[in-house]
Image (cartoon, rainbow over the protein chains, first blue to last red):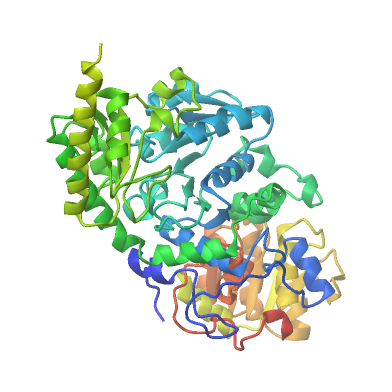
Length: 437
Length: 170
């Protein structure tokens, strides 16, 4: 047998799921079992002291979940993965595995609203401070780094502003300060961008989106590269005796596996935000077609973006591939096959027109999710980002007239038919409103 | 010959039975103890500690030197090296002298002189890898931990497994 580097689509179908050794089942079995028997007292002791690999309890690991983790690690080009109950849980585990009270991290201000509140409210209450750098460009991030900074966090494609992270330059900034770059790759998926190839150290996902792909279950995952030098001095959490494991030093004992071992054995174990095997099983089904679905998502998004750009009712369209986008060059570099299918546009009629537009749609679903096979639409200012202050809202790129779409896999002509109807409805609604004294 | 790549490491592990671990420790948080304990309990390879300061680890008799080991047990299939890089050349010389078939330098045990001695002495050489991690890669252990094994296969049994039930059952 010679070494072969299998392609992305092959790994999307096969990685992590060889035939089940116990039964020969070709599809990944769904192991709905909370716990797993030990072979002997010695085997149990070896497992609990992390000296051998094996299943103990599904909060820490489960065969169906680990198949999903391995497939994600393979697709992102990382050392390993940890699946979590949601994307927010993946971020929490990623941060808690490298920072503790008194520490600090820097994030781009162009983030999903739920991420902003996790960072600035919940993590702050736990004593971990976060600076949101407006703009999120490498220079903005560099300026916000302090001596106690432990990581830099950005989204590949910002939600909802659609800004594209300059991952290579951001990784260089982070590494110059001895800290890892964490990238939320949800809006790109590994089919369109693999941040680790550009120098990122940790990738997090809301697997609820393109990875699951069908809007069925909530889940998250983090993947680590195994390349970051955790023992270089900035991260004593990993390189000092751990009281949870008889004063074991994770870096010394596990080398490149230190971060993932600690993230699972201490943080996932204690936070408890594990992924259900049922959800992992559905995510695995989703991943098998990820590389087939994404080009259709992208092509439909291109069609919709061009259509909207040509309409008088539309003030602007923020799709990174358009000539009008300031992110066009970054999109060409990091997302050569297209910047996903989630983007925003603004209606000339403002917030009022936005609401009327959404209410007139027939085929597009009005809901708070993205990355579904179905086309979705939302008005961020009154929904996903309404918990933010006006200042935070502006910093995260949300404006009152903004409408966010997630373009699905339907026939593009049907999507345009519905948009056309709703744009007419919004325009007449605006005229009525403006006509009032 | 210096072995690079997954298949070469798998072939080495498959054709090997005995491992003499130079620098094995009985301190339970040391990396060498983790590897020793893994190999001892998995029973795919027969591991023996080489450490002049110890009589045994977990009931497995230790030998003070590779030479002493070989005198009683014969040449080991693999000499696994947990020593400082500066001491690796001496281990390589002794490995060649006792007729070991392969030498495995663990993570960070990188010394060009030691590699050259072993290579020219006719040994198969693995550098900057962990024998526990590579065993686990091929018997499903890495996959259980959510790690990327790098393996893609439509065959039922993992390469180091010969029967369907768990390794510990054997």
